[in-house]
Image 1: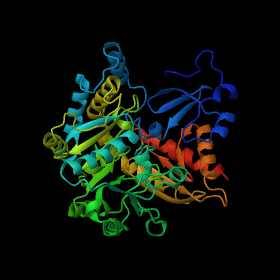
Image 2: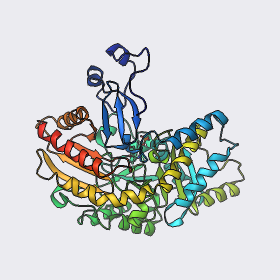
Image 3: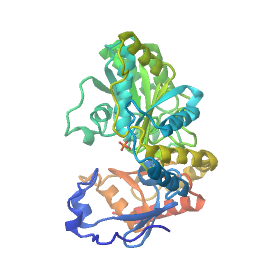
Image 4: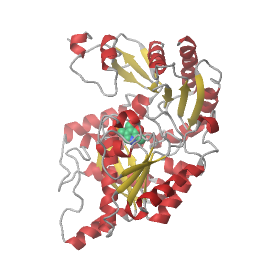
Amino acid sequence: MEGGGLPQGFEATPNNLEPFWMPFTWNRRFKEQPKLITGADGMHYTTHDGREVLDGTAGLWCVNAGHNRRRIVEAVQQQVAQLDYAPTFQLGHPLTFQLANQLVQMAPQGAFDHVFFANSGSEAVDSALKIAMAYHRARGQGERRRFIGRERGYHGVGFGGISVGGITNNRRMFAELPGTDHMRHTFDLKEQAYSRGQPDWGAHLADDLERMCALHGAETIAGVIVEPVAGSTGVLLPPKGYLQRLREICDKHGILLIFDEVITGFGRLGSGFAAEYFGVTPDIITLAKGITNGVVPMGAVMVREGIYDSVMAGAERGGGTIEFFHGYTYTGHPLACAAGLATLEIYKEEELFQRAARLAPVWEDALHNLKGTRHIKDLRNLGLIAGIELESRPDAPGQRGYDAFTRAWEKGLLIRVTGDIIALSPPLILDEGHIDRIFQTLKETLEETD
Ligand SMILES: Cc1ncc(COP(=O)(O)O)c(C=O)c1O
């Protein structure tokens, strides 16, 4: 086991902890009762007080190949010693091209031919929205500037992402971009409770997109963005036929379909991408997280054949030089590319996506064995994802979830909670013993939580 122990000179006192404004955190509580991670290896984290914690969430849905993979660590070490940074505006370095080639080769249905790099899922989403607008404009349809997202969707925290996203707490404090609207979400407890895999009920909810087209005028809509499986909102699965129906409606109206695969990309469902799993080819795919196994920040946008060419042709007609006025200082950062290439090799050589597919039925059975456990009102799953919805305490939504999170942590299991919904998404290297331990610990946690 690597790591463990606090760095020299660092004490976990409230004074030391205060200056860091923590993201998506109950800061005041954390600083009274800190949970500090100091090392990681394989399926486990190490805490500052030397405990081992089983990672039930692959960090934040990103460490798909498990922690501390030598191959990735060494690739990054070698890269930083050779080329620490290179701009990618009007210049290039070989690894970006290599990684883009690899991604295009593994892309679903062989239908994607270009990749734009960003540094996070949020940036990937904002880039994807801009690409969609640029595409329509290049084809003489510049009036297509509207985007349709979905209630309870999570597309990161940029202004583009929160505008198409549909999580109330992420939106209520902030103004959103004009020209966005939302379809209904796809979850209905009454119709779908305790579904195994995709629910049978709900394909018709995709017809909400027709309603949006009628309301706004389909010719004003640039794109529709959805998570094929919504994760951060508490694991919502697409009803059977739903994504196919969205695809049909987009085709009918010339609207680009964007799949936000930031969590579903790289094996989470037992295939490279959710697009492959569901047999639905979107026009644009956003990626992040598992692209580098979480080792170096990176996001990416893959576009279907024709999109890049259209933008190039548009610029050609306009006589300009730069075709797309967008990019980041760290687009295609050498360390991220090195981590990405090593990560993709691991996925392939260890057949981790196939492993996830093989384990998915075991995972499903273990999850549904929790039925009847205290506080549980729904269980849902797909691939190596599980959602466990708890009854909320009267007048205190989210408190039971938070208490379960803390208790599980103390018992040596990392889970993730969104309000009173627990989400699990372990590294794909887990084995059946880990699955038993995850669900056994969870059962005890819930039995002991008020
Ligand atoms: C579907 C989806 N899109 C976008 C994001 C944002 O990614 P990031 O936190 O890297 O900006 C997330 C993060 O969880 C996500 O789940």
